[in-house]
Image (cartoon, rainbow, N blue to C red; front, side):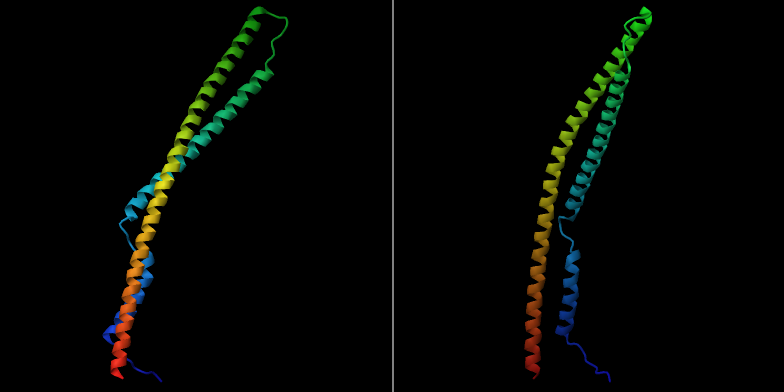
Length: 163
């Protein structure tokens, strides 16, 4: 047995408000675009940091390989002079490569420190925007709740008057 019941204007409005209340989670604020930009900046800095860390690891491996090459070379005590000079020249070249790699490593470490500092400040800015957005949403939710309370009171008064 179905009972037909027609909604009054106020009851319909109340139901509509409840559905709006659920949508406040998806509420668009003035901070959304700024938040998106800040998030993109943070993501870019994180990718840059990963690239620099990868480059640092590669250079460290190259330095280790060069050190192993040096360890494998030994200067003979006797032999032909040009072979000894060639070996000394090879040792000199390997040492130069190691110095170059170490300079690159120092440059990358400086870049890494710069990226880390930028990432810290970008994260702080991002968190500020998130906080402001959340505060804006709280204000909107409070407005909607107050509106709901007023509408519920109006419905109660109307129903009381009907009795």
